[in-house]
Length: 158
Image (cartoon, rainbow, N blue to C red):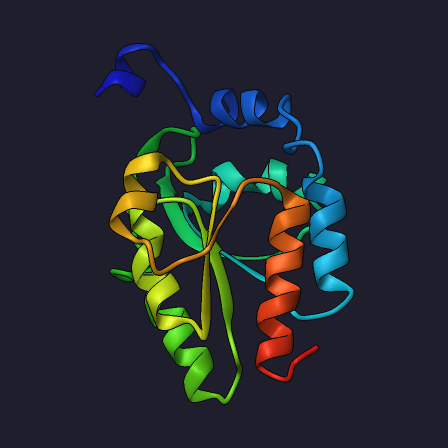
C-alpha cells in the first residue's frame, strides 16, 4: 500500500498529529461541559491517531477504533470496534437509564443523533442540514453549549 511504498510508520503520522492544536475554543468547551455532565467522545478515528490530540484536550473519554501495528511501527490494518458504534453506544446508555444529548457534524453521526434524547448538528455541511432538518444546527461552541443546556433543561437534567 501507499504507506509501505513511502515507508510511513505510525510514528510519522502521530508526530504530525502531535504538531496540531485543538480547534480554538475546544478545550474550554470540553472543560465547561465536563463540569456539568459526564462527556464521551464517540469517533470513527483510531486510538493511535487520536492520542496526541486527546492529551491536549485533557484526555476525555474516547470510544473509537484501533489500528493493528507491528513491532516496527508499520500499520498492518485496522480493527473496527463494531459497526455503527456511535448509535449502539447511545442506545446502550439509554438502556442504563442515561439521558443522552449527542452532537455530530455529518452523515456518520446521524444514526447516533436519532438515537439520542436530543441530537444537535455542529458545523455540518449544507447537504446534511438539508437532509436532516429535524436536528438543530449550531456553528460555534457557544451555540453548542447553549443548545445542550436547553436540551438538558427540557429533559429535567439542568
